Length: 212
Image (cartoon, rainbow, N blue to C red):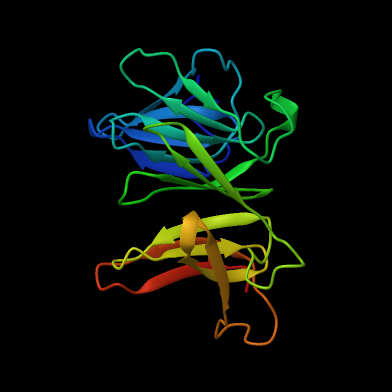
């Protein structure tokens, strides 16, 4: 409840280029002033109620917002109208057909990886080109599960994907294709774990949070 400064649930926290802290959750987007401390609700123009599942700072100074039902949104903090991207997991631009965006990663090449409930997507914000990757039972090196919950890029530029069925490493192929290899985890060497979060530390170690 922004009127009282209390928020029931926070799913993501991001620091924008101007130093402000942003919070996202089922109640929407909030800005936190840690000096006060105080929290205020921020209404994204065109989206009066915007439940969020993920958010990260954009290199252009704005925010990438992953929503629960409105897909992917780029929120400019200087007044430019927000831009909504239609994802391949949806059958149209209607909000009810857009997949939930669980994870976002802006890679070193400035492209945006998007983890959804309907697979993994890649967006080049410079030209709007998009590419989608899905679980294909007939392709042995396809994405192992369509529910992508976490994403990370290591110091060598390798993409790690946390799904509802475990951890996978993505290997680039010709023509922009990706092949995915499952990685066995010590916590569950014989059964898959849902991977909820990924982090590469300063030493290059990959940390993950799972359901086990």
